[in-house]
Amino acid sequence: MKQQYPIGVFDSGFGGLTVLNSIIQSLPQYDYIYLGDNARTPYGNRSFETVYEYTREAVDWLFKNNCRLVILACNTASAKALRNIQQKDLLNYGPQHKVLGIIRPVTEAIDSYSKTKHVGILATQGTVNSESYIIEIKKFFPEMTVVQEACPIWVPLVETLEYKSTGADYFVKKHIDQLLKKDSLIDTIVLGCTHYPLLIDKIRKFVPEYIQIISQGSIVGNKLADYLERHPEIENLCSQNASVQFYTTDSSDSFNILASEFFEKEISSIKVAFK
Ligand code: DGL
Image (cartoon, rainbow, N blue to C red; front, top):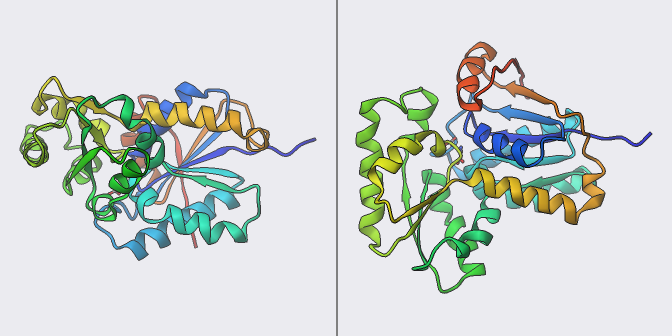
């Protein structure tokens, strides 16, 4: 009988659940393992070396726990660790092991959203500093103007469940105003952090209506479906029992409460340690 495996989905914390939700909507038939590194979140302000080390440990854990295809459902990890993992670490695992990020799918598709060809990126400090969005968008669409704004407080607002509080308005408005001040022609804003869709009501409140706001989830879900169609050798490795398992590096009780809110379903997780 052929061996098949669940698809691994990784984030520094809860944000990747917004991507997992959309992936499951596009591809409900597969099995998924979600891993949140809640004990060490947020990654956004950490150094390149640290994000790479943490992400490599998480990917290694997912491979050891039976995944062959891993999605980094975290922009910071995609920006700072993906290339090294793909070019160096995967050589140690063998050809069946694949790791995909979530920045490229959005940058490939961005042209179909923006008419003015002026795009704004809201992301963590790490993603902004890496300039991954600018580099990737320019690769596909050199004529585009891309401006960025780091929102270092937004992930903590989400992780501490303050994202619906009135106090959060100040920080949401502040960064949107700063982004829009950088380029008045922006007609499209990318939420370049998987935590940010949780703040969508507040973001919408402060962004003019003519500006489109793009969350990554649905784009990533569709692009993954397309990837699996183009790579039958990988698709054949994916087991199909429509199951999801949740793992966290911090307390599973706290994870269950918050993750159930983000995932919009009851969740029962297991706590794991990498070492
Ligand atoms: N959700 C992650 C992202 O998409 C990272 C948040 C963080 O850990 O700072 O960038």
